[in-house]
Length: 215
Image (cartoon, rainbow, N blue to C red; front, side):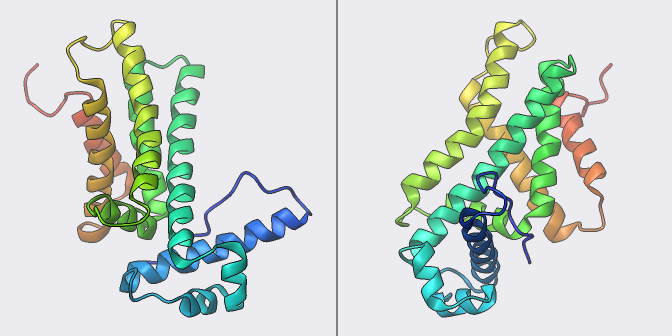
């Protein structure tokens, strides 16, 4: 699967930093596409450089090694996901929505992200199950940053009486993030004929407890 160019909010128009960020974006895209296709170990720096359309030295100018490139890719991709979740929650709050509305908006934001970056999401989920990678500690940190956004909304809901005080906030937040990741990957891999709206509607019913037929 091909991943669209990941954005960066740190570049300044017209400067050298913008050009370097553009180069890093091409390297991120090349790396995530190749690694999704053939695995991390089988992917070489030469292949990444060729796919990105740059010299091999450019890879090492931006990243000390292939492992560092992949570690930064994880930081960058999960950072984008975290920002999209946070923006969805903040937008809902500005519009006067409930905490359930905020969670629902975050579910949709997560689906939109995965729809746009399916190859990155595949890599991210696969790496969560590995324990012998050099970047394991980095992965745990960025994973917690994404989950923490959901935890914040849940805690606000508990404090405001919208959610039960009995819920386990960290576990519930992790479960919600996991639900979106797994459901979206299943959608992209096995049910691609479904629309994003279809998948969001199904997850929204789960979130709002509208799965049973009870009135």
